Length: 462
Image 1 (tube, rainbow, N blue to C red):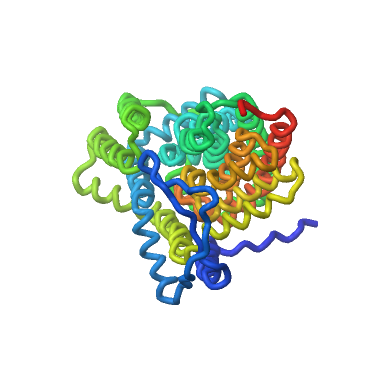
Image 2: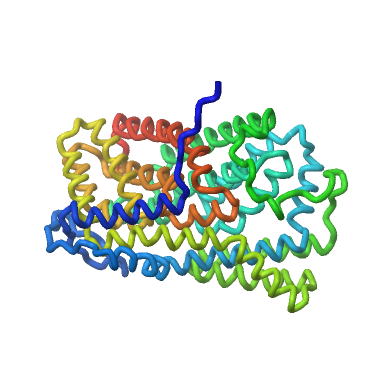
């Protein structure tokens, strides 16, 4: 007999509940703050500077003002969701992606579809490791097309793409936002200790690949047993038999424009430090060139644009909604208080337990500060000295921070990038939680083993 599924509220209801909780915390927790100094243009916490300040509890109007302020704060991520949706809308209209996916499946054969799932999981994982997080938003719909072509569903597509990018980025041994910022704060050689991090990242992606294959086999046996039943697959379904697919010259040109746009984006990110607004601009320019390649009329330009915006608008809305929680916590000035007391709670723990506890602290803080570099700047100046008092190396403290920040991103409704990617995959957050939570527990188990190993080997360089 099948057990009843755990009830998970609608994502909007979850986020509103978290917003109300943030407002309640401003009454329940004393306001406090650390002193901050500016280093290289970014604010850094001064260790030992925490002090209680006058409380500023949020009134009813303040609570609802956090909503527009959240949208204002997240406007760059909101727009990149819209821009990537528009770009993919023009790419979809060209037929190039469908024909490319259909041709790929025809060449490899459906008998190798499990291999396709494994390989694509690692491909998207590598994009997370080396390219970034929001930078990969435009790639997500490709996984949706591929998953549907081989007999999967949109939840499998999210597992192949969103989960892989999130794990790859979160556990990347060369992540400039988390490891780079952490190593600068800890005064460690940049990206040192890469071997243990690489083993952990590869192990986590391997677990994900096997998990995706297991889910795929489950829905091949019984489609109704999957979590993708009833989801809107318009535009992601192949329109003809696999044997009929081939790439035309115009398809090749459209794909070349798309790949060229991505190459320019990646070059700009690494060579000129481009960020989200630059990437959005490249997506918009690529969409226009794709429209010209497709020979779309002016009316078709407008029609495709608005239709594409309509598809991704719910996800864009959720990004702004999620950011309002962070804004409410800042208005109530309770984030520093929480960080201070969590760090104090570690002081009485034994060595190994303190390392695991530090991972837990960073996991909790990630729901309050979804930005990886922002979390590093807010927590590591406090936790690095605590770690040294406990007997932990700085490298172990950075590893605990990376795991706490990176893995909880899989289920963090306040993370705009996650909500944006899920929306492009049309995977509802409640169904995503049902799918990904068992995998999160598995990967957290692997990560805790890595933390314990780091303590045992006195993880260096110091």
